[in-house]
Amino acid sequence: MNPKGSDNRVAASEAPFITGPHAIDDTLIARALGVALEQGGDFADLYFEYRRAASISMEDGRVRSVGGGIDLGVGVRVVNGTAVGYAYAESLDPEELLAAARTAARIATGGKVVAPINVTRVRAPSRYAVSENLVDVPGADRVALLRRADAAARAADSRIARVDASLVSVHKELLVCNSRGAVVHDVQPMSRMGVSVVAGDGDRTESGSSGGGGRYGIEYFAMVSPEDHGQEAARVALVNLDSRPAPAGAMPVVLAPGDSGILLHEAVGHGLEADFNRKQTSNYTGRVGESVASELVTVVDDPALEGSRGSINVDDEGEIPQEHRLIEDGILRGYMHDRISAEHFGEPASGSGRRESFREVPLPRMTNTLMTAGQDDPEEIIRSVKKGVYAKKFSGGQVNISNGDFVFSLTEGYLIEDGKITAPLKGVNLIGNGPEALATVSKVGHDFELSDGMWTCGKDGQSVPVGVGMPTVKLDELTVGGTEA
Image (cartoon, rainbow, N blue to C red; front, side, top):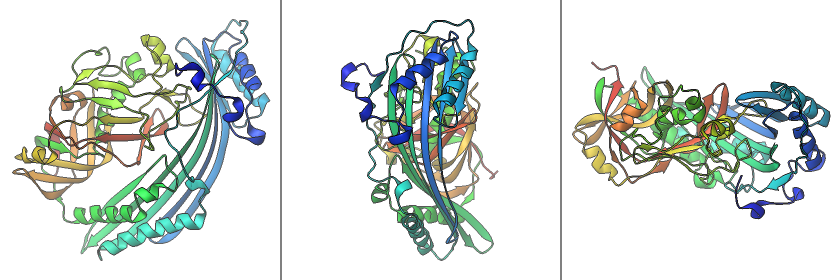
């Protein structure tokens, strides 16, 4: 927990889980935690969650679906060594909560007398202030946002043949309570707009997309308008209409700022999640203090970026997270821990325990994973390449955690010839190994950019929102999988 002590202590009435009939009182919390530990577990926690969601999708100018719902429940976890007992209730009924606690307690045997738990409310920081959550914006106004994006995309060019758009918003409230007595409350908003476009010219059609959002409400559209997303999706589709087959082979690759951070997230970040290292299945296992990248590379996981999609005030184990330096000047400094892995490695919990919902156990997960800015001029980086690929936008990728091998597909990429960005390319795949690729980093730009909020990360069947970002980066050699001989 935050060590500042009394500065963080607040009255329960200042940080309710939900006001009115759903408010969770300290007496019930203490009782449930006592039941969870009565068979002898080392640690227990309660994760209360309330979620409201709303979505609208438009296909080719027509509203096709409108959805929404409310989800509410509590998960109970008991940790006994590295073994975990878990149960949940899809209500806040005290008897169902206590029944879930008894079920989770079965991971331990023998029974013990549980000392009374003194509950202390802890104030979380405020990293996302929302003026009006999109969930609460009238449906007609949300449809109007989609129509604005649709109109902007169609106005871009007569070759725009189809436009689809969607808007998803979530209000999530959580209360995390643990057997050390800490109780932390947070409200986590989320919004995301997505626009996809198909452009046609004769028999050829190509697509483009744009999306963004984060822990914002309606104020997001004062920063990035629906028209911005519509025009950007149209631009990518039109660029791809002129694309040519990509070259194949080993060559320099320049990663554009912003979205290219997804390569860092997948190829490096997952291998630095501590559960893989605890189980010795990561290629970074046992390498803390060793060189794992070029000395130009510094990688951090930062949960505190205001409004970013991956930002959190508190993790799903009740820890207040701070920035983690994972790789500094090419040297591996540490891993991202949940409570179990922190105990295993003798490290403090780093606030990296995250879960999809109250139905799931927390796991070490990334928040906003970033490569920090360097000193190089981005234009000079391009001019340093005789022939290579400029990777601007990614559709995602796959990585083998055990050895770091990855494959990524580009949705927008270009040929670099004689130091200039020239023809757009299609069918570009980047193939390599995370540590080996980072070892070839020879230039890092001063133009750091955070990707707009669009990424969702999957692990062990759980999905959580994340952020990525990086400056322009030159990799001296990477395998490009293209279709041009």
